[in-house]
Length: 210
Image (cartoon, rainbow, N blue to C red; front, side, top):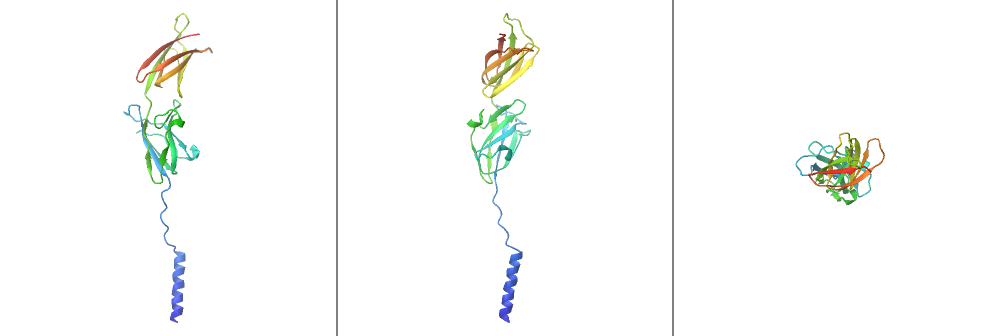
């Protein structure tokens, strides 16, 4: 009799364990975070509205990874990112410019940043120092042409515009050497020139129509 009761007790306990399994262990943190702040060249002000670009060493397409835009404080946060290595870039829709961390014009020159499960990697950056360019356009005899267009292109950097005042001001050009192409409004002939942009300075050039 006692043996039968013991067997029945054991069966009841096993049945209870089958219905109420032991609590599962907490899952390990999946993925990590990349965050940081983008500022102006001198670090004095945040840059808002820059679209984050991310390149995975694993080859995972960017559209499968988190997306972000810098907020009013210049801050961004990308999560969750699978553990691995990543390059981080900033794209500026208004100008088409790109900046890859740290301070590179090309993605291939950027640093690979390591992300670990449950970890946070900080990637801060600042804009390139820039200068401005004033362009005037004249005929072969030196007479001014008031209505014209121009573009200035450098190393992965482009500015363009038109004017009807005789002077075209192109702003925010990264320091360096640019080829400037100018054409009169309504014409297809282009006149080239070179300009060297210096940080924090205004460079002025006069291009003669060919």
